[in-house]
Length: 130
Image (cartoon, rainbow, N blue to C red; front, side, top):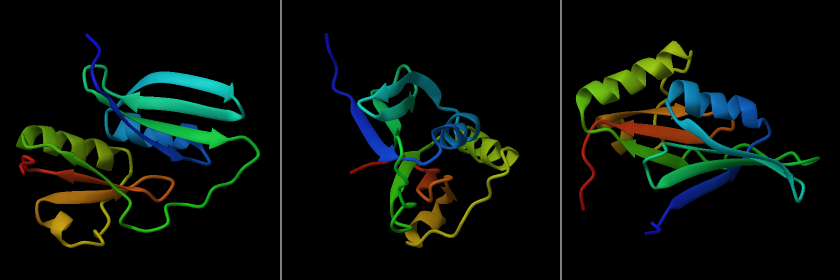
């Protein structure tokens, strides 16, 4: 039976550099790649068993600006402390240090990191609930 999937797409000027941030530092897998699809190159990242993906695209001969604000966030909830610690260690081992969150709420139970295009990823050490 088909399942619903969330895919977040965003532009990048250097897909390979951005992909290293998400794969090496965050542990995402490369799920798919495409080249020159109507002038766009891209890579789809995520985890094979999770119904969500991040798609990084680059339109050939185009330069896009970095993230327009520090509030463009991807928030990942990692409630198990050992999983959160491992994610933080992967980031730091990749040479990526936390940045202060624009909204101080995110600094209370998590850490914020910035990807090569200026988009931010928050790793929260808490369960998400309504």
